[in-house]
Image 1: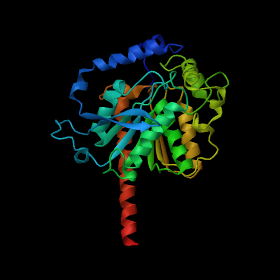
Image 2: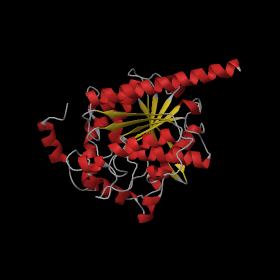
Image 3: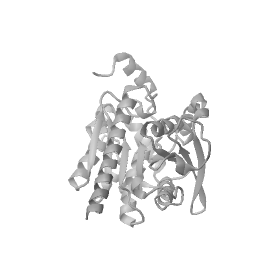
Image 4: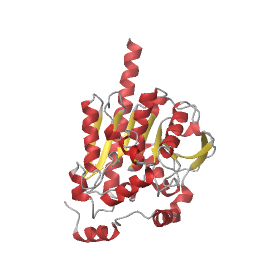
Amino acid sequence: MAINKAIQTILKVLSEPEVDVERDRRIAELKKLDIARIFMEKVDVCISNDGYEIPIRIYFPTKKKMKEKDISRYGKKVLLFLHGGGWATESVETYERICAQLSHSTGQLVLSVEYRRAPEHHFPIPLSDSYAAAKALYGGQILPHIEPEDITLIGDSAGGNMAAAMALMARDRGEFSVRQMILVYPALWNDYTEHTPFASVRENGKHYLLTASRMESYLNLYQSGPKDRQNPYFAPLLAEDLGDLPRTLILTAEYDPLRDEGEEFARRLYDAGNKVEAYRIPNAFHGFFALGLKHMHVLDSLERIHVFLEEVAEGENEENQKEKEA
C-alpha cells in the first residue's frame, strides 16, 4: 500500500530543500513541550573527552517511580543510543520520547549521548565524543555492573552513521569490542548529488521530508574540509574492510533517500562474513522513528529490534552453554 495523496501533499510541503540550522533547532525544541517528559524515569551523568564533559542521559525500563537511584537494580542490558538530526539540529532533549519508549519496549537501559554538534564542532568531534562515551561504557566507567557483551550500539540517521563508524574505529584501535549494533535508516555515504550511485536518492530525494539537497547541506555542516568525505569514519560505506564487525540489524524505510545505502551496507557486511539482518519498513519515510508509539511503522521497527535482541540473548546463552560443556 503506497502513501496516500493527502500524506504525500503534506510531506511535499514539509520537505525543505535546504538546512537552516537555527530554524531547524527551534522547531526541534518544540518537542520539549511533550508533557510525557515529566513522567520519564531518567538520570544524568557525564564523562570526559579530553577535558570536555559529555552529558549522557540514562533512561530506565520502568514506568513505576524509582524508589532509589541504584542503577544496577533497573537493568543488566544496555542500548547506547546516538541521536540523528544531521549531526546538527537534534539533541538528547528532543529525543526523550524515542529513548524512553525504546527503553520501555526492550526492557533495557538506554544511554543517550549528547555529543557536540555541527556546525560549531566539525568532524571528527561529534564522533570523538560518541566514541569516548562508548569507550567509558564498555570499560565499566559508567555502569560497572554491565558486561560488554550486554551492550548494544544503536543510532538513527546521523547517529547510525556514527554507530557504524564507532564499530569500525573500535575494531581498528582494539580498545573495546562491539558485539551487536542496530542502525535505523543510517547515513553511510558521502554524496547526494546527481552523481549518487543509489536509486533511492533519485527516487525519494525531493518530497519525503529528508531531501537529497538537505543531506548535502548536512554533510557540508559536518565536514571540516572536502578531504573528510573520503574518510570511512565519515562515510562508513567507503571502508575497504568490513570484516570482524558486530552482529547487525539495519532498518531502512521504503520512501527514504538513504534506503539503498543502508541495504548496500548490509550486503557488504554479509559478504565480509558478519551476521547481519536488514529489513525495509514498508511505506515508511525517513524519521518515522520519532512518531508515536502507536504508529504502525514504530511498532514494526520496535518488534524487529525486540526479535533481534532476543536472538542476541539466545546466541549468548548457547555460547555460555558450550563453554560450560567444554
